[in-house]
Length: 169
Image 1 (cartoon, rainbow, N blue to C red):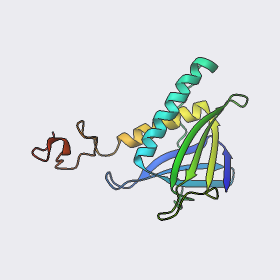
Image 2: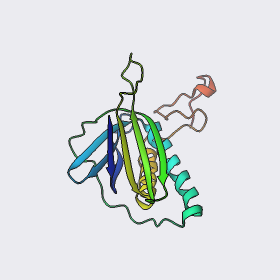
Image 3: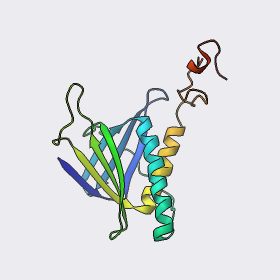
Image 4: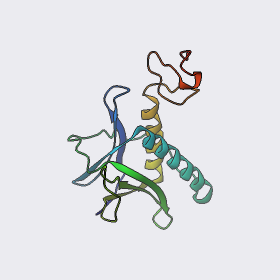
């Protein structure tokens, strides 16, 4: 089933303490709200994908203005429509809107099929630039990442790259 939103009311955020955070993407259009659950790595990749496509568009379509992001916050209830599997980013040149396409992950033990859920969110370049910046900030607010193995640093962190013989700094 396809759900489509054209909005500038979109947010990526996390709930919970570092190490146990749950990440959400939420969009609102008039009286409709959709909430989707994401993984930290997906949010990090989304921030990078959006920044890359927007940087490319600046050269082709002129500068996008970065305005302070409105104070969008996740709104309760945080009852996700689905867990995100695939993320795609696109651009509609005629409408000058960026597309964020989010597809559901198949439940464990089931194969992906064409009957999965898809949410398409269209928003301005300016809003998507703010979303990318905020998403990067949300990811960075978690546990620091080990520079050797890329895993989160727990206290203490025994890095697998050191064969378990030394804790990284």
